[in-house]
Image (cartoon, rainbow, N blue to C red; front, side, top):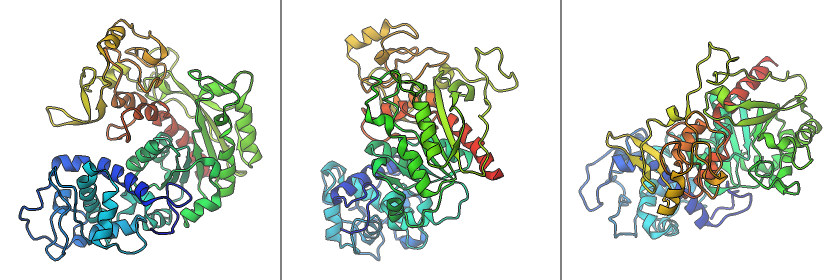
Length: 501
């Protein structure tokens, strides 16, 4: 075990925990490749191939071919085989992801693999082989497109040493929605902090090349970040979406909730890093929580850290930016002296119910239109990777399994009605997405709660965005996210101010 700092904690972490994260990421990353290119059993004969270092751009099925000049076997196993031999390429990858302080022998690699549950070992070794030959080659490692870069000294060094003008550090990164909007606008996310494991895995998978640190923001300092990322320069922006549960109308709104004060660390970290700007996003409920005005507290906190701010945060409505939701989000922006505060972003779409809106803009699609090409599902039907008869694969499309009693209750709920945990969506737009009891709202037409993919469509995530972790944890990842279109609109305005300075 190497003594180098681990990405998921600032202190050393047991090897089995590293194996667990790598196994989950690899399984999610290469599942579609596995579906399209089933590896043959290792006892089958295989054709001679070029050396791995010369086929980094090859297909996964080509990467699974055995190299006759090596002593190892292809790590493929039948359903009943769990002891899987590996070769030097897997060893090289394990060395890079901080799993060994020296190039491990086959025995040591096998010990690493055995830390994964038996049913997952063949896939673990197979995916390690794919990755080590396709992305993590000796000749040209593809660190900027690697979901394992968080675990790799080489990768973290390479991606943070790139000369990029508009960089951002993402605090309270969640599933990566705020970061997605900033990336679309032209920012490069050089580091993200997220304490919840499944959300961190989702961030890594969908933002390959971005190092994600699993840690509480309270423990983060600029010095400790730079210990993990030695080449980390002063970012253009620090962006953050602190937990909203203490402010939300759907929660207890307790002024003593410790999460309500986590925003204080955003300005502190931005100041320590020397960031040129800072962006904080949250729900409108923080304006006043049982007599406490948190808008003033957040504004004062940013000003105390040396940033000029708007007098009041800007409220953006999702439906003004092409998202079929009436939800609003508040954005606080601070900039260093010498940088002009950006203007509030103008709407990009017109709402069907807004007669005063700009008719030259495209109309925001209805919620029904956003969902119309997704499959109809009975409760309990679907899959995490649902392959349709036409060959199309729909991700995170597993419907919740309701009992007949619950289905009968759902059937009686009218559009817009029902309790907060089982509110039926209306076909034009949603008020907001609430993940009550780990379930999402009820489908506007079908008698079940919506799938994670349907919720992601409503939020504006791209269809290829995959949410990791157990099905029970995915709804919160989607529901807690800011619609990426809103963060993109803010990021574009901020970019104009940074470029003009």
